[in-house]
Length: 136
Image (tube, rainbow, N blue to C red; front, side, top):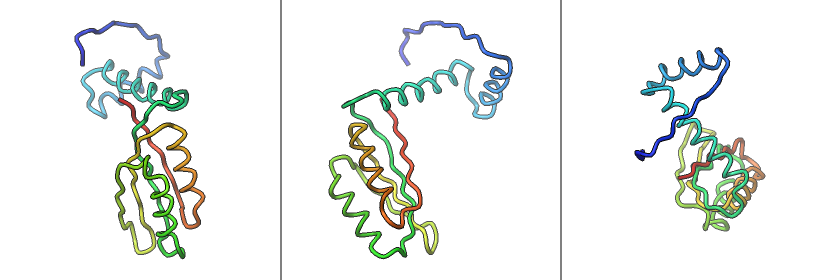
């Protein structure tokens, strides 16, 4: 963290302060300030994701699918190959006899990542798709 720190003041309802203090203790933050900084990083990333236009984003797309659905592996690979410019890496995990999970590390514009996620959601056999975006 840089040495250039500004002090601000927050006014919060006591119920929020109690909840913040519980999280600070539970997650072993050094201070309330560190927890608030961490929360603001997520807030800023969400804002950039929603308003960033052509800004580059980094994140993951997690896909859970039934691997017994006819053609699902080929369909997933086809979409991934067609949108390879947005995918950095892929990990395939067997969750059970019937269910697999793939984690795609992605980089690109919000539009590209959203398009990829939506194309994956539309595939028969896909049960769940989650997108998590983090920014520098």
